[in-house]
Image 1: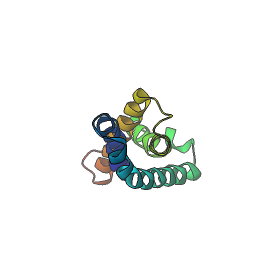
Image 2 (image 1 turned 180 degrees about the vertical axis):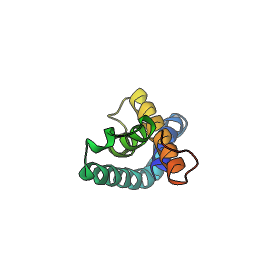
Image 3 (image 1 turned 90 degrees about the horizontal axis):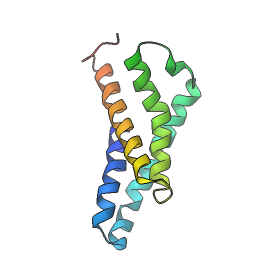
Image 4 (image 1 turned 180 degrees about the horizontal axis):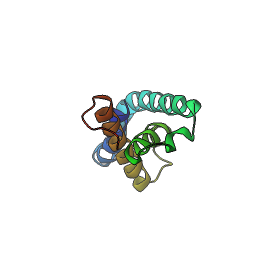
Length: 114
């Protein structure tokens, strides 16, 4: 879901430039659902231990920080798209996307923590 959330944050910036306000309103339910799911994922990881994610190898720490803090930030960007500046949305969306891919690669054992 983190990968999808990162893509939705990045896609919203691209799509918002080309669509009319009525067409943008049709994406709001998907955007709201993604915001809620990302926030829940991030908060659940933060409840497990907000500083625990900083221990261990660098790539693992980056992936876990992306899952916890990035998911909360991505949910906030999707929940309040007008208030978040576009550069912040691009950074958060990219961060979530990279962290989600890293976590997926760790789970599938394609790459091993160093």
